[in-house]
Length: 252
Image (cartoon, rainbow, N blue to C red):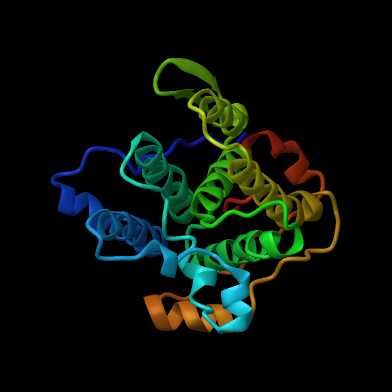
């Protein structure tokens, strides 16, 4: 069976700059934007009222940047902010470097699809008004990592050990204990599961592959990163069912 791998993005590096430079481009860009947004807002250099998701301003005043900037704020400097940044550095980086190794366009398309799932929610469900979906997207990456490495041994803050498959729910429970709203995290899990079902579980069961990265995304990624993406993995029923316990989205 395939060897289960654990995140190594937090492994010691020669220096902080070496570690930062070793990060893959997408997670590096997003993590940097999140840190900068929190830092600048802390010192009053950025007004969060210009960044949060407001569909009335998006549709009425064409402030379309809000569709993206709402994903770049993970909260003020605090323990939850630190945890979310660490989750990007561990689980997001693992997905980009290993699960989607050589397939940066597929990784970008996955993120875009999950963004498209999350962004319309306040417009479709008026009772759910979430100004910033950054924490939800972080939880999406955590959920996808847990499905790719369900049997990996992990822990919450080194105190509560569990299989990785249960880690999103353990983190959700810890947030509840700390008094956090569970809805953003739950929505992140929903977005992640929807993607994982359509991209991995359904094709593995013999269904038609419903998620394919468009050529324009591949061209955009080549233009931005100078790397051509390999094609997505092909699932063969029976062979991949036998490997199901080790995850399904990594290259084969």
